[in-house]
Image 1 (cartoon, rainbow, N blue to C red):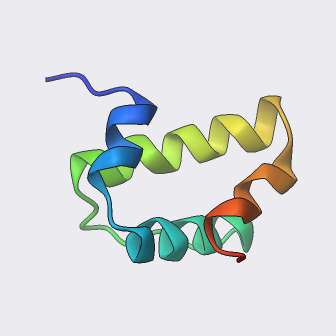
Image 2: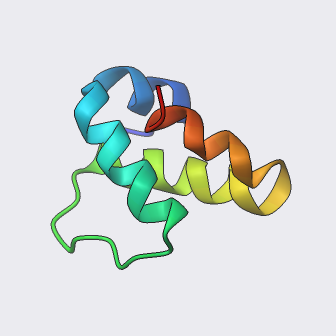
Amino acid sequence: MEMTFEQAEASLSQERKAYLARLMWEKSTLPDDLTEPEKVFCFGLYALEEYEERSAIRRYFEP
């Protein structure tokens, strides 16, 4: 089943999104055991960083 970024985002907890967003922000290595929604979410953040505005990632882990 293919999943959109929005579907992946909606399926993850706020804590998990914050954790993954911080890893992406810090350019850290992602865990090997990511679920399909987590992979889609991280790819979406990568695309956001590369093609739009990197600082938008911060909204997931800053109040």
